[in-house]
Amino acid sequence: MSPALARTVNALGLLALSVPLLFAFADQFLKHDLPCPLCLMQRMAFVVAGIGIALNITIEPRPAHYGMAIVSAILGAAVSLRQIALHVAPGTGSYGDPFLGFHFYTWAFIVFALIILCSAAMLFLEGQFEPELAPEPVRIGGLSMIALGLFSLLALGNAVSTVAECELGFCPDNPTAYELFQKTAPAAD
Image (cartoon, rainbow, N blue to C red; front, top):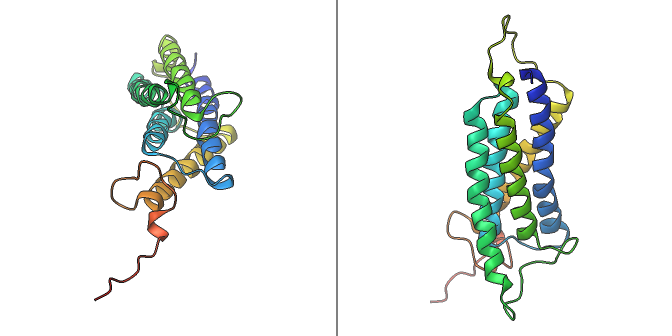
């Protein structure tokens, strides 16, 4: 696989990775379903994995970038499994509404597993890591620009909404409002 083809494959992967973040934001803003702290940690793991993939597009494919995506996906999968374990016992309820039969944290685990498998598979395609005889500057095409733009907007939106929800402190276990926008009444003397 050539470095140029690897960049295209990584752009498709970054678009695919953006889908769960897009659905999470749609749920958050359209259904007013604020993410819990474990959900925010999963989003953060998606963002870090996406940064690893984005580095393959903007710089050049490197094993370390795939490694970053894999390690982040392993940590995100662990958080997802923790949340699944919290809600698997009868009578414990769940967090959020299901989507196509699964809750978002279950979908997150599935996507993290796919990130791990796809990144590991890309590591076997060693041609992308070989230096080119006449290296040209990296040219980012239309698909890559769309993938990078969408992912960047989602990463920035995630950071802004997390600050709005939690301010600069700990996030509430069961959030009901954006704390940054909550006005506190002055204390009575």
